Length: 129
Picture 1 (cartoon, helix red, strand yellow):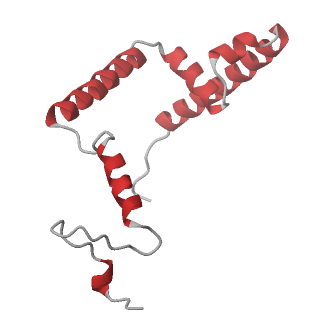
Picture 2: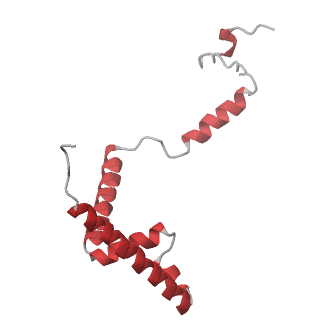
């Protein structure tokens, strides 16, 4: 059996002869190529890319504006819940006793974080050491 590089290269369409690739017959390759033609192209048009970029940009701006409109305490609460794998909805579904435990722990942690933050700001920088 001749296994040269040329035996695997498809010939031009001038001949109707089909050469097989290892493990696939020519009909399977043709069917795969034709099926690929019927799918959405991987390349976007400039207009599609611009529209997608504008949509992402608009959403980013909206998310930022929403975040900035929250109070500092709301940001602390949201960050604490996220750190502990919780959402406000999760807490609302809990029993009143569990909600109280969560709120107490959250309050302690946030107060500790604020205290540490204040200590870092008041600590003088000693760059001459």
